[in-house]
Image (cartoon, rainbow, N blue to C red; front, side, top):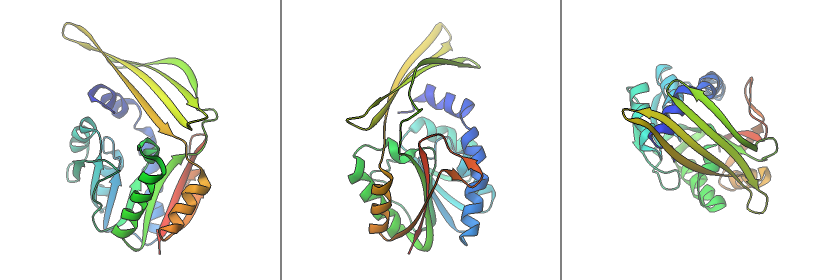
Length: 235
């Protein structure tokens, strides 16, 4: 998932979300009294949010399952501690906030069981009053489409999205084309994104000791249709 070619495209063409959300995440942290300290970012991608947090004075530790993303993140956010790790098993150090934006939890295999283990580890790592911030996909309505082609500087991306109601899985199929010395390189990736029930997420978080707020936006930044932002405070 997110090999070299797709990681490059994501960083070059799809970083606007993280750039727009970063100030809203900062405001959320500060309103909750988390004005400094350690923030752990999971599914950090190419390091856009991590760089913003680091520049704002936080000690940032971040991880992502994609080695290609971590290579980009180390270039984009020097001074941040990055590592390759999966949300399903990564150790979460003691911290003041745990943050993951961009539907990261919906990419994790294992469904409810994986979420339970993650919420438990996050709660154990957070200081009392600390925040767990993330967003998830609760509906695939308006999120499917036939194959469309996007082009940028030295890349082409063909992508489609379909939804299985029985499995509650949104599947994105991507073909990436990039020029190389003797022609072009074509790579393919398929991402399976789980659609979660809002009540189930709320129930699990409360079970593990969080007070929960859910919204359709991060502050003033409205999320895509079907996405829900979660602000969970450790009791």
